[in-house]
Length: 107
Figure 1 (tube, rainbow, N blue to C red):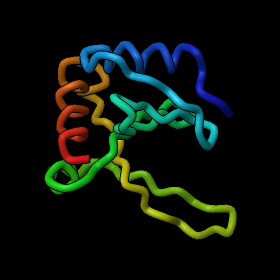
Figure 2: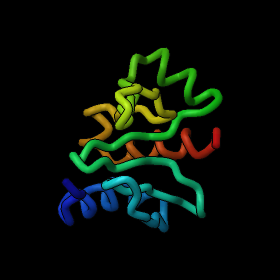
Figure 3: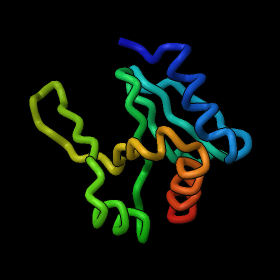
Figure 4: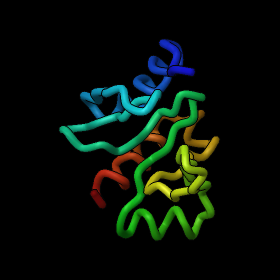
C-alpha cells in the first residue's frame, strides 16, 4: 500500500501554514520536513503522526496521544518517536500547525 495523491494533498494543505513543507518517500509512507527537519510522518494507510521530543513529548504523552509502534519483520514491536495527530487537529489546520510548530521547537 502506498500513500495516495489525495492523502499527500491533504497533508500539505493541513500544514500549509508552516510555509514550505517538503516530502520524501520512506518505508511506504512519507516524511514531512520543514527547513530540512522531519516533523511528521504520513503512513501508507493515510495516518498522520507528529514527532515528539523534549517538552512536546511530555505534553503529548500527558494528553494520551496514541504512539506509533512499528512491528518489524522479526515480529519485534518497536515504539517510534511519533504520535498520531488528534482528530480535532485533522479538522483544523491552525491547530495542526500550532502542534507542528511545538514539535519543531523541541527538535
